[in-house]
Amino acid sequence: MLQAEEERELRLKRNEETLRELSDSIRRCNIRLIGIPEGEEKEKGAEGLFKEIIAENFPNLGREMELQVTEANRSPNFINTRRPTPRHIVVKLAKVNNNEKILRAARQKKITYKGNPIRLSADFSGETLQARRHWNEIFKTLKDKNLQPSILYPVKISFKYDGEIKTFPDKQNLREFITTKPPLQEMLRKKLIPEKSKKGKGLQNPEQRR
Amino acid sequence: MLQAEEERELRLKRNEETLRELSDSIRRCNIRLIGIPEGEEKEKGAEGLFKEIIAENFPNLGREMELQVTEANRSPNFINTRRPTPRHIVVKLAKVNNNEKILRAARQKKITYKGNPIRLSADFSGETLQARRHWNEIFKTLKDKNLQPSILYPVKISFKYDGEIKTFPDKQNLREFITTKPPLQEMLRKKLIPEKSKKGKGLQNPEQRR
Amino acid sequence: MLQAEEERELRLKRNEETLRELSDSIRRCNIRLIGIPEGEEKEKGAEGLFKEIIAENFPNLGREMELQVTEANRSPNFINTRRPTPRHIVVKLAKVNNNEKILRAARQKKITYKGNPIRLSADFSGETLQARRHWNEIFKTLKDKNLQPSILYPVKISFKYDGEIKTFPDKQNLREFITTKPPLQEMLRKKLIPEKSKKGKGLQNPEQRR
Image (cartoon, rainbow over all chains, first blue to last red):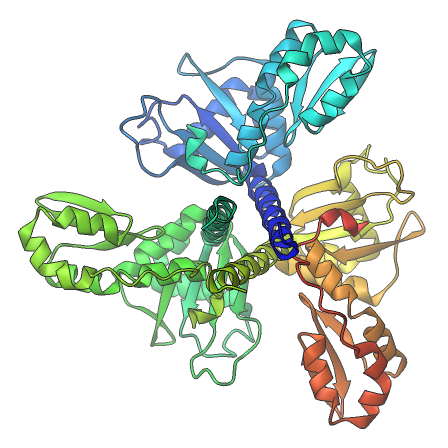
């Protein structure tokens, strides 16, 4: 590759990363409601629906914080008739803090709406979402072995090993770490085989989300 | 074109699209006040001016919603002495919802400030603004024929045909649709002649706005 | 360079600029607290700490405006043990206006926390921060000569000359201006020698901030 080309390649990559960081940072105030049947928001609006869900599932939280909602909408805007699942409702809160409190509480219990299970989730750019999914198998293995894994914002994995919490930003880091830890190596080796280099992946279309 | 080049082309395009989406989404809370003489905001500030305009033109709306303004400024920051028209005032509201209510109401009536007509408009990235302008002629034709067209957020056109509301994301889609509808073809053919491919158009400088 | 390449170069540059503008505009509601020892926020939270600092240093300001804080956090998220200085605390306010009032007031006096000096600063993208630093030497020279310079948002310099305030967006503009002003030329010439063209600089990693 020529030098000019290499430089352009680098700038392109930097743009992609900055874009992804921007997209994620804008989404930090958002919560996704997953599994609410289409049309349920007709009467009281998506914002009213969200407040009702918080009041029902987290009565203490709802009382203690002032829930200021900036925006609440189905996303995407239009129904895709080929999708069997309802669209997510995306709720933007005025305070990131409240968002985090709610998501933390949501991880501790089953959430329901009118008796049916629903999910509350953080909101990520398409790219980050996909990168997080790359940890899925490793996460499951670590959980099965009681190593208390968790996926950290935006795309890190952490788990307990030898009494310490270890954090890894990507597979390469984890791969290097386990070379000197035979039990971990045994456990994770197959899940950490390097993927063929995927050139030009860049930012994905957020459509893939659903 | 080499494969590496093609890939880079694709990534560049994806970045441009994501940037445009981000720019538009950040602008979704904004309203533009167009036609207010320079200096009018000196006394009560741009925010006070906006609230006064809402109170005068939409007395009901103003009473029913709590108008939380995040920011209100002339844009651009500096006066360009070669421009004969006053700069826009850009108002950022805390709630997208209120923004939409105001813009919807503004489409139904003539807005005035101190007796002179002014305009309220949504805020778009330079690129989206230009893409919306591409519908202008078609919009006029459809309106003349009473097909009740409207431009949807951010760059779609919709109109009523055969008792149904049809929506099109771009000219190519509309072109394909009319091939089987002779009356529409008659009406729109000339307005839909493919433009010469404009390579490398990308994101435009927002300066072109005024 | 081929035409296709030139076009891609242009689009890349446009993307970088739009990204930088977006990054800066998102940061416009932020204030950075610099010099607060790590851990001070444990008890009352970063938001509480910020409000205390405002109340102590700007009693009038604090009383007159309603300080709505959207988010307050150490940045970056994790401590880098090789850095001897505490991480900044980044505070996002709901109103850009209040942000500007505070920063203006902060330029007029020494700010302290528990008797120790701290700094309040605006928040910029890594690129803008670096571009502003390019004015540093010229700023100092102008200040020494009592020309009352100031750095304007995001990367302009202004100073008083012949009783008028002059503003320059970049060194090239300033260079052209001084060609007809021998005293300024004498003062600034050495500080304005064109740097070797730095191709492919693009957006910098925000890490460089600290």
